[in-house]
Length: 389
Image (cartoon, rainbow, N blue to C red; front, side):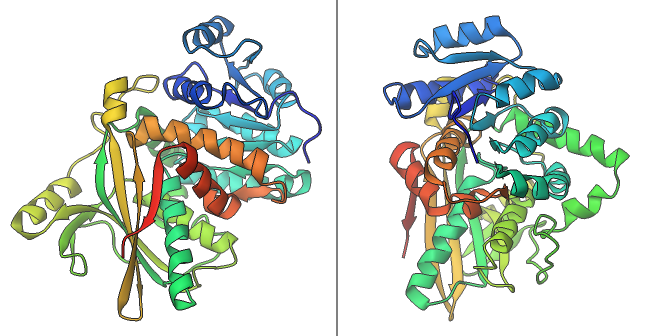
């Protein structure tokens, strides 16, 4: 698939807020690793040189001037690398030419996309091309949706180990999430709302939990759009604003893995608010508020102190035989920036270095890298996957 290339991957968007964090992580973790060759790419060479200087990027690391609106510069970048890691969203505005060029050229691609309408279009448009050229395209390699997608996989592997079959009913429960929400997530939501005015058919895509599942239509899913009382956990839970993308990716993973979780699989993802009247009041408040209203603008983000003081803790419950298996996924930094930058970096490395046998196509993290990526994230990126009972 990949001929001899100068770089294993290129960080496109390296001068943006999240891109700089990816560069910082790579410098910290892989500066002395001669087996991993990477480059920085962005629209402005002076800014790239500034990032390289301030982040102590090793001498000789490539700096590529690339504009996503200039297809010649995109193709020049792609000619030099095995994989493009792009943090430049909203992807429906800035990602079309890059992902198309990767698919047509047999080059791998990872992003932070949480835009199901755009993902649906690209899956329909580029899957066959990627299969023919050997390009492996993996969307959603940040907080949406790695902890959830891989959390369900980790849970189902544990349930199957204990019971010989997967759970057909999994509940994702966000117990803690501390840190500022991503400005890119807010911008992507805004771009999606604008797209709906031109393409009202996208309403159907956004409303259907199986819209990324290659035409498969599974059973009716549990409601996740209003507060409910989870009697198995004895707590009120509220709608989680990232559930609409995470749920679609989890179901797509199931479809791509030959329905490893079963064709009757149900998944429900919500935010833990606590028991009693206080829990109900908190759940009611969350369900009526906009968690992205105070998100930073794209290109901005929280301080280092805020990122390092952030964290998240997600519980996954697999119900089976009147019992329930619990596992957790915990991250050691704020989800939208600190942890996300580490996750996408490890995704690019894993895809290029550890997935030689993966055929071309458009994937989720679980269906492409699976337990290999779980191991990398635990070894390097501050994530912990563990059984709870």
